[in-house]
Image (cartoon, rainbow, N blue to C red; front, side, top):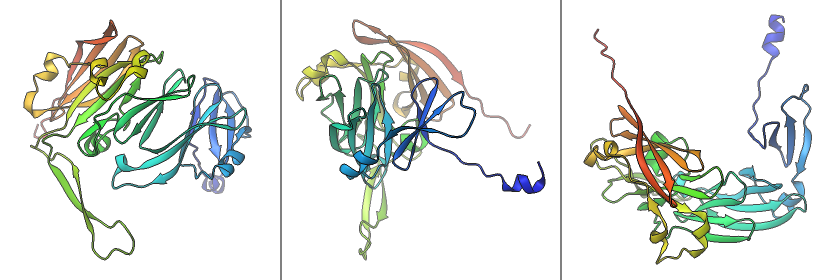
Length: 315
């Protein structure tokens, strides 16, 4: 390669989804393209042409994801809020084989598929709703969500920017039969205020307030709950707390007491065990707690602990 050839090289990237170990799909305009793992050329075949459904339903696509059985979830009608958790979308679920609209939900903050592709978790008005594809039914599983007060299944400003690797705090087990979710309670957390202009014609700004703990002030309380998907159709505003079990952190995490702690990561090891990483306030200790299902409830034991030591820069 000559220097002239090198200068002419341009890189590009695409954002897509692995449907399985062999197939990668991405959206090119209004057409989903298919790339096979062992493909030897850069030509990608058409996986699904979404031009018709996008035009018929007048969708300006902001995001998308595939489930199983050719179920395609599109996010459109993006409405920008004053921070990430106030952004909302309309979600459309299509069966691509017939190009038919199966389900639609407006004003949704986040959405996440279950690994088995049978359910979708939607965060709407700071509460969690589970859509069951087989029964075409939507079930609300939390009823206490409130803007800037109780965050169910979604991060606040602090956790989204500085703590977690995913701003959706809903975690399906690999078999799709269990749901763990995080709840952030902002009681006692101080508010951060800033100016924002809502409309272009505004002469004066509006003061916006949201919970954000600065150093030395109270952190939001993070609680992880578990719900069995087989009971979600029975949940109501009056009984939903009776059907969920709290994953009480290990004594090590609880010993951090009034200083508070963060939920840094959550992942299911298998369909019976979930691993949660907690960090203390100054983030020099990480504790990996493991919760095991027993009689459809979570029981904790400490997994292991890591301490981070500051290096003495004077030596």
